[in-house]
Image 1: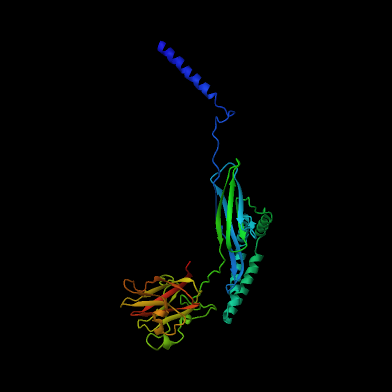
Image 2: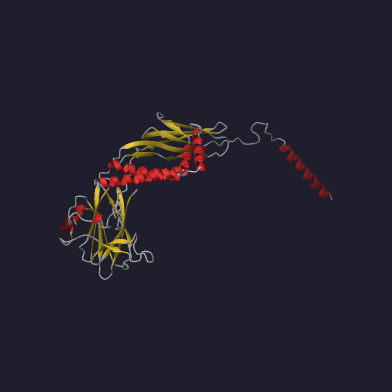
Length: 402
């Protein structure tokens, strides 16, 4: 009983001491209680190049908008963060509300069919001033006329709901607040190429702030490298620009005698037709392919336009018979190459690839690729020849290597 009494009294003594100590903690006393918040903002920002431009077919710049989207950030998610942008030099720099491009894209989405037809018409109109072949000009103009009819019909078919949606979006654009240097996200429109120092100050509601900056290099807008055209790429009938052609017309050599591997005779490729393209399709594209007899007397030749300095990738498919050893050689030649003999000279060969039928399955097509640099040339020659067994080519494509 005596021990229990002492323990009981000791428990209340401890409780009394604890109450006494806690009574000394007060938010009203200096340097006692909550610790001071010493965390300040650490600013950072990201930016995206959204520059747009347009050039004519002679690569003359028609216009360019050097625009970059900037978005500020900080390590603090609370405490009332404020932003202040600076740009040096600032002359000619304008600010764009970040929501403007989004609203414009929404309008284009509402008018998707109309916009697609307008874009197609613009592409065709772009080609006409630099086209020298009157037959091609006539076809382009006829295509434009047909698309204009489709465009008028698409505009007339717009529903009242769509028109109202467009009107609402246009009203939102008109009501947009002007962008300011205090916006967390905005678009800088620079007056032209050059170097600009873009700074960002971030401040919290406790008065703490910090600053960061980056040197932004705005590069000169350059024209998009046009995609070269390979005519009758899959050797299909009526696949030329005007709806004609026998699948071989674009692949004929300038001179049979000069380009014959055998020194004379016809060099025109033959055409192989898929016998059952619906139930058992065998060709990579369409229903026809180029056929090269085993004797090696036929060749494929086509000169195409390229952009000096650009790098391209040409892809195609080959297939072989399997009764003997055979090869198919595809080369990219300099435009001044004028004969089969010159096509064998290393000085005239820009790039080349030779495939054989070792390990191949009879008449099963396999895809290949050739990468080449145009260098100073404005055109190059695609040249193909075979030996040993009957061989086939199909589905040529070309792309610009980025």
